[in-house]
Amino acid sequence: YYLLGLGRRGQSALRSLGVWDDVERASVAVVGRRDWQPGRTTEEEGRITMANKRVTSRVLARDKLVGVLRRVLEERYGDVVELRYGYQVEPVDFGDPDGEADGTGDGNGNGPPVRLEVSRCTPVRPGGDTAAVVEECSVDDSADDGPSTVTANLLIGADGAARTIANAMEARDRKRRVGPLSRLFGKGRFKVTRFDDDNPRVYKSVPIKFPSHWPSNLNYSARSTGNRITLEALPSDSSGTYCALLLMKPDDPLSRPSCPPSELRSFFDTEFPQFSSLIGDGVMSDV
Image (cartoon, rainbow, N blue to C red):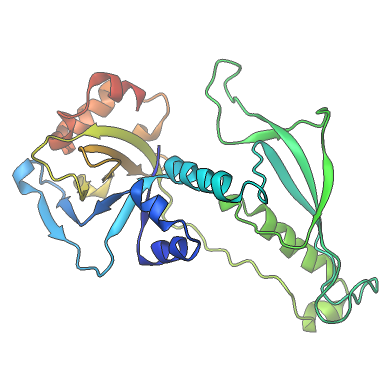
């Protein structure tokens, strides 16, 4: 699983939507951090720094946040909001805000609605029927109810790193400006800003139960020798249950899905012994 941190801006946004009280009850406060610098491996060498913030950060699992928002939608807005899972949405066109292309607009930005193709998906199992389902799907064109075309006056492209909606908007805008003068002087309506990932990292999740004398409202962090791997742990409850992330480069030997548990254990014993004793062999095998 994966934990999310909610600071001032995130809390303010959820409060404006009237759901912050629900989210807050499902989250845990984080009031500071405890850090181990490279080469520092004993419990006593972890330095505690309290956060100097007007708004206390809150943490909760991503899936828990989704669950809270789903419950709020169903209980308060079930008569006007319909939730559907397992569908892929592909934009067909974004209309024409001014109607200059086909005369359907009124010149005031009120053009035709967005058209979308919606297809039912089936979960992807990369390793066959016995493998775990990943967060992807393949379009099932043979489904009885799909694909279908729908229209919408408002489309929110909260589609994550895939940027399906944003990429389609940008491509549609390039297609609209086909002439050389349009490409040189025409003003595009959409622009996607992309940044090169010059420091890629992958992660592995490690559930850890901390001793009762360790504060359960801190962010725990440790870096290995040479900054090869960083461990970041956040609380998933107020009883010392933590989710730690091992952050490493994609080509690191420990990033392999088939990495032997003995190699990972050896690394923890050498670099993070203060955490190694808290992780059982079963958890190490799952990681």
